[in-house]
Length: 74
Image 1 (spheres, rainbow, N blue to C red):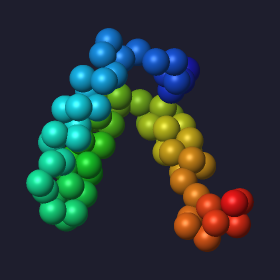
Image 2: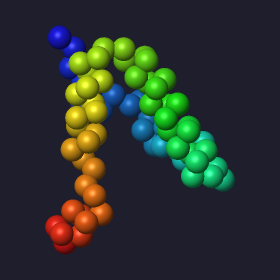
Image 3: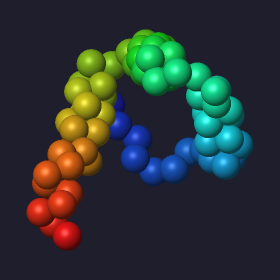
Image 4: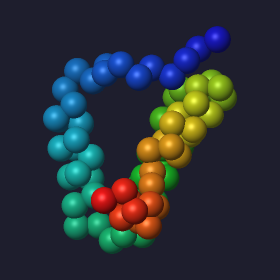
């Protein structure tokens, strides 16, 4: 059963980050949200494996704290 790859596989993470931030530069919040949604769907389609996608969703959901949770931990 495939598992989500968590080890870094970027050949150039700084270049990817620069391209991603450039893509969002001077976009409205709504445009950026549409770009992010489309990017997520394109990458999910590329991955294709439902179990891997569900694992990614679970990990992503754990990493997000609500603003009130973040303040409580300060």
